[in-house]
Length: 243
Image (tube, rainbow, N blue to C red):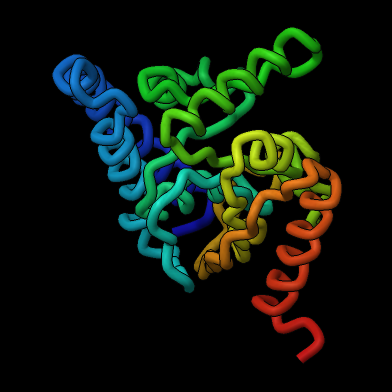
């Protein structure tokens, strides 16, 4: 089977399962929302929904190393190579709220489910929108939810880690929530930025690193640079650079 035909079948599978799963998500939100304040059950169902796409793909292998920490909440950050990263991170076995660009919330079924989960939209280009997003993120952390953020802000076009923006680390410092860094490798080769055709057999690796405490001096820039350096180093390790 060629890559184009396989890609068409995979996206068709995503469409059919999304049509079937979204009404279940609506019913689950209606049934559990009144007593499940943080929507943990809905997020678990969403994680299972996303899990289908990596688990049922016969050409993909997924390897996680490290254990998700207990407690929390955490500001979870990861490098971003591909749209596949999102599917992988739903396998983390943690409760969190995604922080994602507002355009993603408009995607039929999947984006609508993001709104059901009360994930947080980034409205780019306006100060008012950014301030609102930061307030929502801070409130979610104080409620006990971890946050999932790609601090590069967009997918890397070449797999090289871009400079981490400071917003996620400012949230950590404001709330005292530790930063939990994750490192993703292998997804860019399967579906690069701006690509739509899935590229053959691939192994995806996710490494869970040790949490990094928030800085008591409030220096978000220093925290961002430290975590960025750690992610770069661990990514090189996964790739075998320097060995």
